[in-house]
Image 1 (cartoon, rainbow, N blue to C red):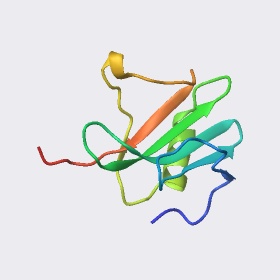
Image 2 (image 1 turned 120 degrees about the horizontal axis):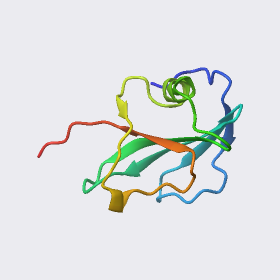
Image 3 (image 1 turned 180 degrees about the vertical axis):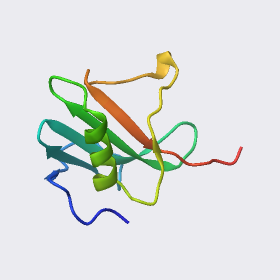
Length: 108
């Protein structure tokens, strides 16, 4: 279940972003913050996990902005985490962007 109110976030639509077949990326904006929400493959699993990218043009998003985006734009019954992969796998196109990934337990 998602939050039914966007709490000031404006849904800017898919914005022509590249996606996997059958999947979509949504773009939201609130004040100086921009957020992209998608379901994407993660790691070596075939699982599609929720992914939130949040950024501000001239600064890092603050904790309350990240928290607001998470609890407004992502499913409420799931857990999310900010992950730092090995440096060789780290990709971040925008310099002031943070990423939250759906945190699941996978069978080994």
